[in-house]
Figure (cartoon, rainbow, N blue to C red):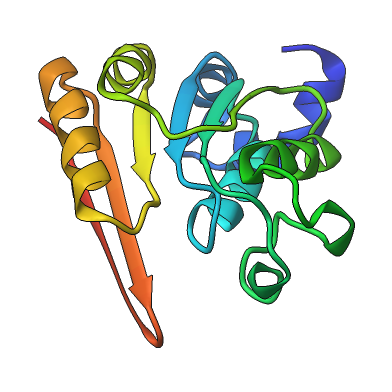
Length: 163
C-alpha cells in the first residue's frame, strides 16, 4: 500500500477487525456484482469507496429516467447509457485507484462460471429467478461466497451463502 492509500483507508486500518493486512486483501480482491440497478448501484459505490481492487459489474439494461430516484450510481446526463458503464463512471468518480470492468450485457453461464471462479465474493443484485439460479450454480461450483439481495416496494431481504 502506498502513502496515499494508507491515508485514504486510514479509518478502515484503525479498526481492530481490519487493520493494514485486511485492507491490503481488499485492495487485492476481485468482486463480481451482477446487476447495476436499485441494489447493485449503491453496493458498487460503497465497494469502490472501500477499496476493493477490482470490481466487475455486469448489467444488460440501459439507464432510464425512471431509474434516477433509486439507482444512485446513474445521472440524468447518462440516460440511455448501459447501466454497467454508467456505474463504472460513478465508481471511478469515488475512487479512481481501483479497476472497474463494466460488462454491458447479461452474463451467460460460461461468463458467470468464469467470473465466479475469479472472485472473492459475488453479489446477486438481479430481479429474476433464472439469473439468480445461474449465479447460484456458478458460485456453488467454485465455493465462492454469494450475497443475494432483493427489494420490492418497502420490503427487502438479503442472504449470504458461503460453502
